[in-house]
Amino acid sequence: MLNPRVWILSSLFLMLAACSHLSEEVTDSDNSNEYEREHRNNEEDKNEHEGLVVAETDAGEFILRLISEKAVYESKEQIQLTGKLQYKGEREELDIIHVESPLYFELLEVDRGVELLYHPTTELEEKTVLKQKEWYEEDYVKRISYSEADEHADFFHSFMEEPGFPPGEYEIELRADFTILQEDQPITHQYATSLVIEVR
Image 1 (tube, rainbow, N blue to C red):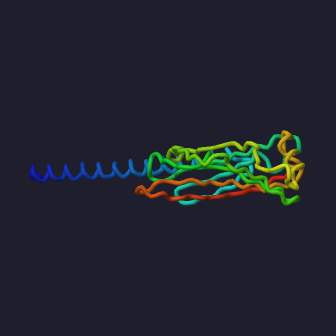
Image 2 (image 1 turned 180 degrees about the vertical axis):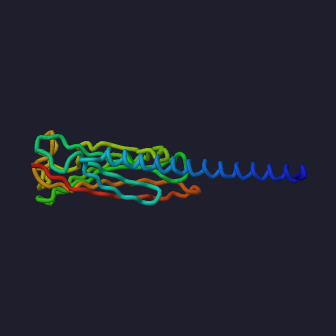
Image 3 (image 1 turned 90 degrees about the vertical axis):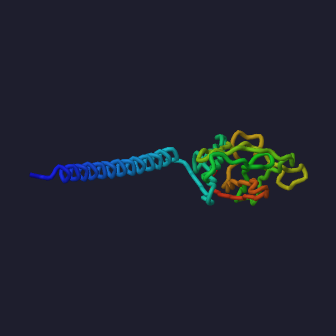
């Protein structure tokens, strides 16, 4: 007959072993669920951009993304461009300081060699709050800076008056330019990404 003390110790070892096995199973399940969530998010992101033209710069704590609805547009068709910025660092929120907007678009009509640029009308600083892993985004709005004396003034007029872009090949560059305060010291961040579209 087993000594009662030995029987109690044996029962305790069996219980501990069972709990240890259960703990491992829960951990494996959690890892599997985390993988499934990440895989599902990647698939959703892929499906979201299916059929679109996408350019992206991954710069450590930030992602800059430029999206065009199409690669080829008709001349009277409205151009759909979106610029997106995401903070993916450790903080839940991050304040960024910028002039007018942290994002701006620069265009080059390749065939004519004409730059379509916009210069902010104010130097006043503004602040935007970026939430961790959430997109800040802006759609492209036509606006350019030029003078009537410019040799390409007629093209600029046509560009601004038409609902779409004049026919040609356009390199679209999205730029991010902002500052963050790190231990009360301003740190400037500048990123860029680009894509090419055609207007027939």
